[in-house]
Each structure stands twice: as structure tokens, then as C-alpha cells.
Length: 260
Image (cartoon, rainbow, N blue to C red; front, side):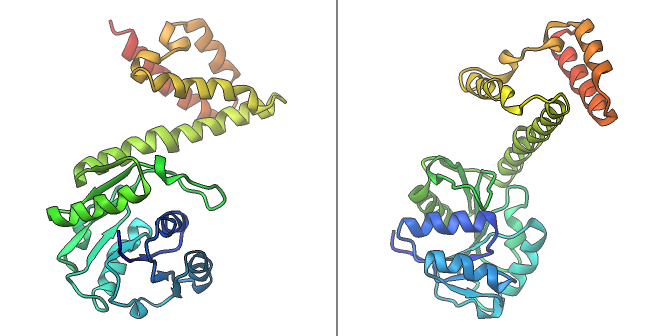
């Protein structure tokens, strides 16, 4: 695919995405960040020009990917419209923001959404990162699908509603579970136990839900209706927020599996 993609943003997602695209031979003409130092670090990795002024974005790229925070997408697009043609294909990478944020500024717009949690210090194998693409214009969606397929084995066309629901689900399975891991880490740490003792259990839980729906894999005292153990756990919890969360989740599991 002989094409060029300018990246508007130099954060975690932009960094991994630019590297993945450049690794497949995609030309990255420019990297924009309000902090020139951040743009320069990423630009050096992908042989691009670093800029910190949207007025310096050139009109030569085939794609423009806006990889900034959700709150900044509209303003970036608003400024970008003045320096590139309205016919250019411009997409954002948000899971929650609708593609229609770009409608006032560009005729060819869409979404290129990598579904993954990114950290600057952890390498990402994009082949296993699902990418959701969308554009209301079929030809543009095909172009985005082709671009995604260069770096990922899991590219799917999903509309704004589907992507918003997927993002919501991702918050539950990633952000919320990570907070639960934090609670587990806190409890084991206070008991002078290594958190690593829980790692095989965490890994087994993930392996099990690859084979069957989570609803069929639920275990634990609430699933069994073991109220004595539940009460012991509640008496052990000294942090009120942890206790409230334990009670809420336990109530939900009891209602799901022990309906009267």
C-alpha cells in the first residue's frame, strides 16, 4: 500500500500506531504535538518532520489521523480544516467520540480505532490489536480497512453505535478489572504476601473465558451462595470503599445466579 499518513498527536496511542505503520512501509510525513519535544522524539523514530503548530501541517498526505484526547478532537479538526483540503480523509482514533465530530470540517471522515491499552514503555504487537474502522463513504471505509489490515490481523467495520458500546465494554473488562487488581494487590501487600501468588488465578480466568461465556465460568462464594464466607470477607475488609464494592458486586452475582 503506497500511501502516506500524518499523525496529529504524539501520545501513547500515536507513538505505537506511528511505529506500526512505519514498520510496514507507510510514509509518515509529519508528527504534530503541542509539545515540540514530544513530537521530535516520535518523529525521529519514524523519520518524520516534528511540528508543534497545526498551521504547519502540509496538504500532501493521503490520510490524517487525529490521535488526541477526546476533548481535543473537535478543536484540532476545526484548526486543521484551514490548512488541508476538505477532500482529505481525516479520521480520529477515539472509541467513545462519534465520527460526526468531524462532519463540520471534512467531507471525507471516519474512525480508525485500535482497541488496546497503550503504555509508552511496553511494546505492542499490533498484529493482535483489534482495529475498528468506519466511514459513511464505502470507498473510504475500504481504504481504512486496507490500512488497518497492514498492521493488524483483526480489522472490523463497526459503526459509531457499535464502537461506543465496545468502548463501554472495554472499560469494564480493562479499566475496572485493573482497579480490582489494585485492591487485590493492596490486600496481599498488607498481609505481607506477594501479589504474584494471584497471577496463576488471573491467567486461568482469562484462559477460561476464551472457551466459554463468562457467565458460565463464574466461581466464588457469591456464585455458590456461601453467605458465611461472604460475611467473613466483609468483616476482614477495613477499607470502606472496598467493602462497599464487595457488597455491590456480591449482590449482583447473587441476583444473577440465585434468583427466587
